[in-house]
Image (tube, rainbow, N blue to C red; front, side, top):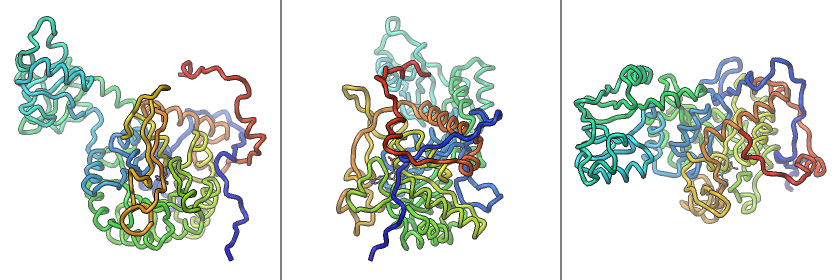
Amino acid sequence: MARIIAEVSRTFNEYLLLPNRTRTDCSPGAVDLRTPLVRHRVGDASAIELHSPFTSAIMQAVSSPELAIALARNGGLSFVHHNQSIEEQAAAVRKVKNFKAGFVTSDTNVRPDDTLSHLVSVMHRTGHSTAAVTHDGSAAGRLLGLVTSRDFHPQRHDLDGPVSGRMTAIADLPHADCDITLSAANARLWDERLDCLPVLDDDGHLQHLVFRSDYADNKRFPNQVVDGGKRLRVGAGVNTHDYRERVPALTEAGADVLCFDSSDGYSDWQAQALTWVKKHYPEIPIGGGNVVDGEAFTFLAEAGADFVKVGVGGGSICITRDQKGIGRGQASAVLDVAAAREAFVERTGEYVPVCSDGGLVHDYHVALALAMGSDFVMMGRYFARFDQAPGAKLPTRDGFVKEYWGEGSNRARNWQRYGQGGQGLIFEEGVDGYVPYAGDLNEGLAVTIAKIKSTMVSCGSTSLREFQSSARLTLVSEQSFQESHANVTVRDTSATVA
Ligand code: IMP
């Protein structure tokens, strides 16, 4: 006969944090959000630390190279999705690893015999006013000159004339070699009063442009997560089907960490795959999941997982619970797994970080997930709303939305994530829809981080470890949940909040 677990399955909405005493030295500026990403001996540092506890979901609609770059610059990490060919995924990883802050790939490019009117239309399309003139009009062609919107005027110059007539030719153009550093490039921009410095390879082909404005921009990201070579860190999702081919290609491409992506990670397949990766690629950390209880956590930790991801059925696009009757409230799942992690620490002296994945609806849910013992969170819906996410941005009567679809939807058809038998989906476990557009990730995430720091200050904590060990949580009744919300007619003042 089935065993009924005594505890009810609970979600984040059912809990609140009680404020603890806040000492005078406990202020948002003093809060440190650094957190371990991978397994380590207690007392040692994790080989990879995040500077803010956020990772983006292993999903087509979320973890593109652009989003990975933006998130790593803000202290978090993306796991590039595996619902694409091995070559495509490796190329996406390389794109993140090759990103050099301040060194941009030129997106406004023309050939010398293109007309000025063509140049105007290219500038209009990209929104940029500096164009590279290359022999073939590509971003990596041989550089022949630069032309900016200040070099011609539609009323003074014949727009049918060639770009070459108005460009600054390469002979008169200051430029740099590939080995130049960002600070050296910046020094030249100021010393030589330049707005833009092209960087060329030995054959004169354009590699990057460095703009004066971007140097200041890079200073905005003091919390970037980088490797020993100062390259942004990036993770990648893998599955239990083609890992023997995918893991080597991703390691070769420079991925810093991998994660098995499965809707149900409590399986012999995942344990076998973890064992294989640990044997053949011991240098690359790899996480496992998803699980919802302590028993499954211990199973994956013993199989070698470097972190364990928690969450089945709570994702915003998820219909697994409707379809299969499988899952658990995310709060109960995290609490159970975190308790098993502490027992694992006691037994082995090894700390295996826990990630709460999916179902985080409000910013304060992140604080709850951390207080309950997660070391970091993974979010899909949250990141899909930003400019940097790959989904299309569409206008509606009430503003903009972004497309967001589940990996188990017919659109993504990620059969490797769902064990339904055979190659393909027999039934859907996710939906295809829209989320409200939320602008730029840098700005949105800064607000979320400010809220979490403020919660931690109220709870008297300046580090996540302290927050976890001292947090006091209370269950909320239906009535006290009602009390949490405003009880007047609300005037919209959002535009006045900085
Ligand atoms: P969200 O942050 O609530 O949108 O949840 C994102 C998480 O949902 C992902 O990290 C996955 O664990 C999970 N997920 C992604 N696609 C699907 C799906 O189609 N069905 C069920 N769960 C999904």
